[in-house]
Length: 254
Image (cartoon, rainbow, N blue to C red; front, side, top):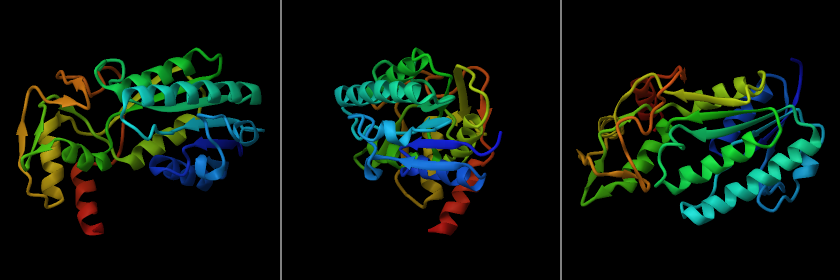
């Protein structure tokens, strides 16, 4: 495939900026779309204009809330507006970043919003690929903070397989410029281990002294954690960056 026009929804964000850079380096015409650039998928503002002549749309937008109702409203409005505009513009491939386990954790409101987004895309009569990723290495500090009580971190011992954001961006860029599969691709990191142990290694690598204790009843943002709730259980693609190597690079970068 030659040069294509690729619109990245949420393109100024953490993952979106990485994808935009990779695709621009590969010679594509990349447009980073976000409210800051005049494109709002919830209201629909700017969508028709930014999608004119677009070959590919990659949606990595985020709801800026963890309130289940607000998350659902965001992904429902955004999903419908974006698929309708993409269909009208004749987009050839609609790619969405989602999360491994969204279909297995009904108590997690954010996951339920993402699942609704997936369903809207899958039923929109557009060539599509959904990429479900495990948690990013870069998100582990946020998780530790959310589960810190009385000076220690309490987490489930369920399986966990985090991945570097750079790997997710690279895989997304490759998927987007490939043929739509009209289905789901799951991606995870090279190493799988108990949730509490992986976060403990992250904290030790960042010289953070908070102890991590296993709590079998600990949830994951409202969802109950079974052994395989947060990891791929079928075929999946692996990132290339090792957890310990990434941790070492973080300590030298700070």
